[in-house]
Image (cartoon, rainbow, N blue to C red):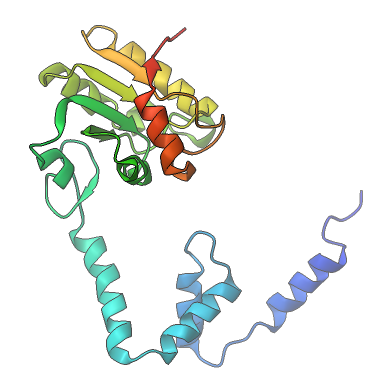
Amino acid sequence: MRNPCAGWSCRRLKIETMVQKYPSQLLEKAVQEFSKLPGIGRRTALRLVLYQLRQDAEDVQSFVEAIARMRQEVHYCQRCHNISDADICPICADSRRDTSIICVVENIQDVMAVENTQQYTGLYHVLGGVISPMDGIGPADLEIDSLVKRVEEDDIREVILALSSTMEGDTTNFYISRKLAPYDVKLSVIARGIPVGDELEYADEVTLGRSIINRTPFEGK
């Protein structure tokens, strides 16, 4: 069998790895930390670190403090699990929102995407992911029980399932529908204006807004 790393590109990668030396251990450590970010390789990390070195000390300190403070002080809303500066997020605390409707989304980015459409005025519930056995994520790893509790305790008339149209999203929709079956609540899904397999956060605002407005009753099989 041919060695998959026998090609020129693999040899080049090995050479680059061998000759990648830094004049400072502090610089190398900073590059290592930046390269841990998603989508950031060591070359990009090096450019980012060198950019920071060229900035005023006050600007760099402000950058560092903003990241540290966010990590230490950020809250997750006790009701919907959205990110917030307080125990209850601004959306849940807004008396103008329709408290009888909950839009169930996968993550924080999806909340932001739906809000940007300016077509939805209800509340949210962030699951923190979708059911994915391949990734070791089961129902107990998500905020599904807290959703059921909200439906049980609050005057909820409708739950909109706004998860991505993937196999994992559909599986999660079906599981939630079974959990909410004993309750007198309408279940609906966003219209399939979102292409199958696409993530909700990448849909344009017009398409996503229409998908919410034209949502259809959920028909679990």
